[in-house]
Length: 89
Image (tube, rainbow, N blue to C red; front, side, top):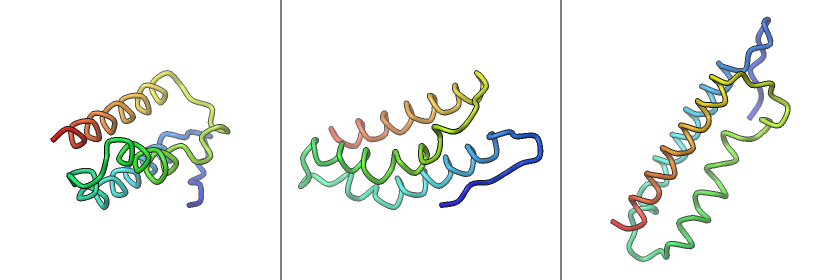
């Protein structure tokens, strides 16, 4: 996946890039989340296995500001809400 480096040691652009990649991963699998043939547990595994690691890969080495931390938390809540909505629809 690689990492975007900046002169000022900011991870904001890297986070934005990863969030966009995660959104693409989610929307590529949207038909699976909407499927009535897959169980709720399977849909949760589909979220945790291919989607969450896209945004969190390498994040343990990031130094985050409160603003960047909030952006990650907001993104996580949005994806979980989408997954939950599609699980019960």
